[in-house]
Length: 462
Ligand code: FAD
Image (cartoon, rainbow, N blue to C red; front, side, top):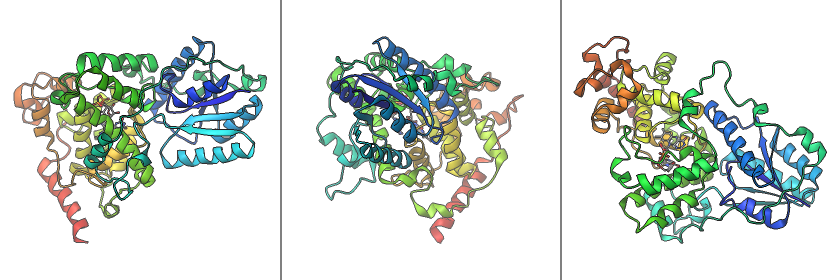
């Protein structure tokens, strides 16, 4: 009897503990369920289409296929397991509140049907509950958490693709219901805004592994010094591959650790990968993080309602070059450099005094790496309302940030061609030259800053 391998955010064959478990039991049915209850952003949908196509391709190369279905995950998994006469359904764990609830419900329902359900640790360096303070409580601050991780045994070495992988044929009733990726209507049609994404990315496990290998071999040297410079290709751009599980964090860890003596660049890079685990661990402990400020006094923050300002920010027309460059990079490629994410998030929540959730939603819709843990976690970090957050009163000045991190202006010139002719400091203060076709600043930096501090002060006074 077959085992059902239920793929979710782990679209890879190597280092996939659930798949390895399934393969050891005998023939496998590989399932992906597109559940409308779990809405994805537009850029993620684009990625998912190609990611499913790539996984199906990789499975076919081994004599199998990916069975793609649409509907309530619980209903589909139970139905398929029953139709196939499966003895077990296996998966790798998820950590968000609603997803965990679904998984718990399915486990219970399958057990009632006499079908085994087994979950595995496949998507993190360590499971959230494995990293605890001496008192056994969850960490709230990153640095001691990371120290605790480093004091633990190294994450398990990655597994290879199971050698014994064989496939069960689909029962006819299931075969009739299975869909091609295109039937999920994940791709944009009119307008087709995805050209920039197609030019930038190749979803799938093979592309992700190639990117990991080339980053570690060629580009990791210099990471610590250059990772804050958005004009340089200094970071790995592995985030969407980690988001969809084409690459596992354990593969990343061991690729870096195997390279050579752990130097400053490798250590700095791994500590960034650590933030991803920490964001998921925080979501696991505090599921409300997805939608609510973790510091509850921020419930009283007098966020403004200003649709025109929000739209100017979304479209990269704020009049501040580094902000606009970032928002346009995001729109064009589905990705934005981390330093610039921090600058645009600070600008939205402070100079514009708009609710971090408005920014989080826009990122969720436009990022190919949009992640239900890392996205709200980082928004709350910048907005000051997270547990281990930068203080709200630390307000990035976008002109100084631009001068510091894009000193030659190459990043701004790439994304804001209207002002590409400006040189030196003028590039980050274009209003002094009143260039044609580029908007004047939508907010005065000093006034915006004072307004933000006054709003924050109301939380302290109450
Ligand atoms: P690298 O510098 O090469 O880092 C390697 C990996 O470490 C990344 O791929 C990522 O998986 C992880 N990582 C690095 N920094 C962080 C971080 N601060 N938090 C969590 N993981 C991190 N990252 C996402 O993956 N998804 C998101 O939805 C997301 N939203 C963000 C929103 C805001 C407002 C901010 C400030 C940051 C956000 N980040 C998010 C974190 C970070 O910006 C991206 O992970 C990073 O820019 C991805 O580029 P990279 O792969 O080249 O990173």
